[in-house]
Length: 335
Ligand SMILES: NC(=O)c1ccc[n+]([C@@H]2O[C@H](COP(=O)([O-])OP(=O)(O)OC[C@H]3O[C@@H](n4cnc5c(N)ncnc54)[C@H](O)[C@@H]3O)[C@@H](O)[C@H]2O)c1
Ligand SMILES: O=P(O)(O)OC[C@H](O)CO
Image (cartoon, rainbow, N blue to C red; front, side):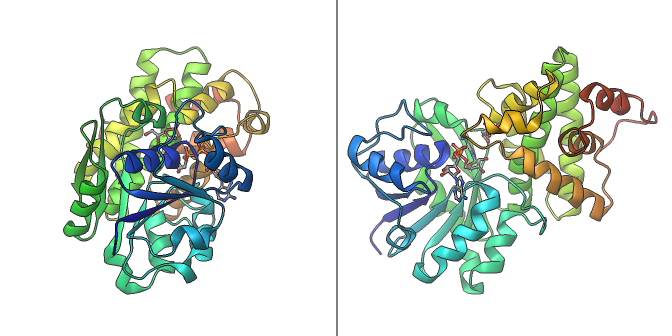
């Protein structure tokens, strides 16, 4: 099959990756959820909603037709919001080639089913395609990748040959891709760091300093690792790019949407009001609900995630949440 690629989702990350691939010479079809956006990208070569400062490659074709996007492609890269992935994949299924590589670069846990996206893809795709699935994650702000700043990420797949193929397809002199075989760990790291980044933002919004942030990053990592181990992931993965790497980036970086939402919560604004003013997505808000429920179901202790859940979904005062976190029973430091 000729190397044609479809990128499903034209938010800031999907557009950035589409442009990276197009600049490598691939022929890329970018599926836009918003019909008008596809037309404007075709006309102006600019994604004015999600990545306005970047002129897009001539190798990108934008479309609002999912059928046109996925038909006859070597690789499909899904970069939809996690809560929409199931619906978009279902709609794409009839047109999808059974030989395509299917890669997901989204970071979240589905609400209600409490599934990781790998589980959603495996539920919907025929079994013979499961070995063609890959997951791209790691510390990567779209704007920095678009600006050509050196970035390192991981591509996880069951099948090492597939992980290597994805590595080859995406790597550039400024975008370094490592392979990985721990899909659960890589995915869970990317999803859960958003929850801890919300908490780090809350601490910043309350006016706390570096000590609080370092404590949240470290103990947040312990929570991610505990839940990951229970789901079959490996502890080492959480010390890598998709775990600690992305956690540090998102808990410290001013470009993080999740941390920004947390800052506003800490400053006393209400969640609805914050989200209604956002065009972009902060995945951590919905993932907090899934992560809290998943941990509860599996009997995993996740105190930071629990307090974040109470702030977001039970309107708990962030100051009280901090006090409740600090005054838990004293114990040895352990994962
Ligand atoms: N932006 C980044 O720096 C970055 C980096 C790595 C991973 N990610 C992940 O990539 C995924 C996509 O995020 P993004 O930052 O590209 O998006 P974004 O926040 O820039 O834009 C929102 C996206 O959601 C789409 N959308 C809204 N409602 C939809 C629906 N009902 N069905 C399908 N699509 C819908 C919009 O069309 C748009 O593509 C997320 O899981 C995010 O965590 C983002
Ligand atoms: O802006 P955020 O918080 O969604 O983070 C973006 C990326 O996931 C960072 O790796």
